[in-house]
Length: 314
Ligand code: CP
Image (cartoon, rainbow, N blue to C red; front, side):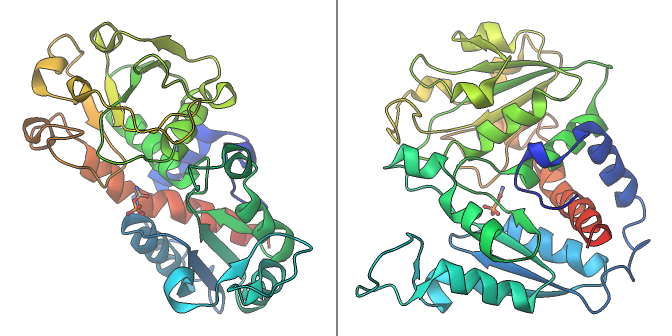
């Protein structure tokens, strides 16, 4: 693997998820692989899980880790080419990415979308600038449109908890108090479309994801119909793709215990952070249906298998 920007960099997503599960059973079996190598983690936005799990994954492989919070600790970066830099931005991404790449063997980058300029966000200009100018492999730690480390951990978790060979997996929109990116649902859809599952997306009319991400998934606008017979329910809010960044309100879409009655004793998933009693009811999160903690724990091994594959290809 030369880079990890999206599922398109993974030849066999389920195979990699199974390798990650194997790694989890003996996390230190490659502890010398990253000796004298450094992973740089570059954050333009907040993070709990991605920051800690990716660092932990690198430590398990014997690497050093450096973290840079760009918005707090560094110079403001210009990303447009050809501009006269006489404003507040002191450094261009061309120099910054190349410098970071000279200090690290691998770089991870997190940068959220603006949610105001769809064309710019969906061009992945920042992630692609790092990929072009850093000179080292890039790990996408959640970009404007996708969150592949999360999706790999999600696929691992489904494989670990599946009760049959071809589970029904439902991605359901849920309410929220602020407009959120489409990165997690986009990415989850991409990975599920390449996994041995029956995949359905349910959301209010108008909240369709971009077709290049929803792909061949079944779309069902009736949430209760979609949840019938579900083995896994992935709950997630996203803001509108079509009315870009619009916050849609529909509190009745919150996940609650009564919605699980017609499922196949469904496991409930969420990438976290989750707002209790807005997105998912307490009674669900505190029940045996919830596997959100297992998902979060698997973030370490998803990151570790990716870093291992990048180290092997250096
Ligand atoms: N799920 C996830 O990426 O969590 P963080 O935003 O805390 O990293």
